[in-house]
Image 1 (cartoon, rainbow, N blue to C red):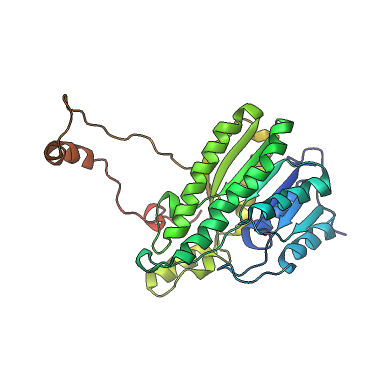
Image 2: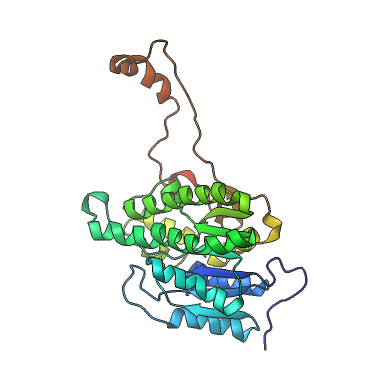
Length: 311
């Protein structure tokens, strides 16, 4: 039997981690990597399509079987992150199976891509419910356990669709940028209890990314570049952030693209103008906005910022 590594220097040995959306893609690689480094894993996956339809226990159980076949410890959860009571049951699965919880990886997600002017209320709510509400529900369910033991870590998956921008993803972009705000708030509120919270924006070819349109030569070239970015390249950073080695790393936003690691910026003032006595609309038009305009950000998309091939 191919026994998973279990050396004394494993960074997350005997840690218990809940990974949502772990039945395939990036989440599956997270589960395998954590298990390979000695962690005990709750593999959560509702087993839906990319757009969130249907349900199946097979994806989560298949990953559990894969981990166990290699000598690791894992249990499956098929609860929905988008429901508060179900999210609590996800966390309870870790407590019941392994006795405690050390890390939550909020990875579950769906896509309902459509241009903003055509997006339905249902398409908006479905994506917000899974990504943003789901991240809050699972994180909040874990918080009492983390608080009582004065330790724990959260790893949230964000996206450059929110951090930078993308076409046809108002729901996804809003949810992913909301997760950044959630992570920062968790980092601030839980710091006194020794709990860390960080975000990762992944670049990788996955089932969700596979839904990107390829109607134009530019789109096809972008997809071909993304195919070389393996989902497994994201996992080492998640394992590190859950480990004791990441003490003091909290409230940060990272990105991973193939062999590249990035620390992403956070909103800070870039320019200012002042007028004694205050501003009028006319004064802003004549003087204030022209001075600030030099610092304006263009309507960039991710591919406009990351213009070089993955390294």
